Image (cartoon, rainbow, N blue to C red; front, side, top):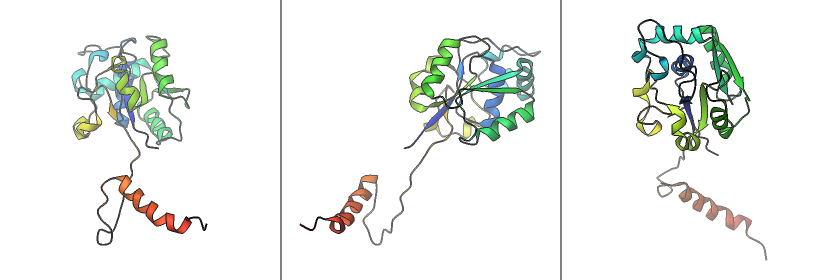
Length: 206
């Protein structure tokens, strides 16, 4: 089964750290809109209103704001899935920020429910790892943010204003010898050929 996921940053909640984590992982992120704004650093407005690190004065100021918050809240990220364990450890080591992961084995609906229920509380998730279906169905929960490599992400794999972008997925490729078989343009072409090959060998003897 193909699992296409999107990261999102939860609107307004601990936004400084959430943005820092976004920059580190270059994941598909969404920010929750109903949470407490992050502290500001001199010369910047609230990070909750920024749509990029540059808009808030640069990466150094973003990191300072994240450290002043002191903790990054994540959810539904198993350490053995998509290298999240190593990513989280690297983030903590580099930025000196505590990271908590609630319900590591939770699903996309659990994450949406948590954002809705916890609102502006200190325990609300800052970053979500959602299936694309859930990300596209809940845009009002997220605030726009474009990561440093935003321009490198294919247009078809991100929201136009930065509400989400695809982090990873499962893909299938088919190889064939065009000198021996007609071109295979869809999976069903391959299945038809497999069925023709299998049926004579497994046909009932009656």
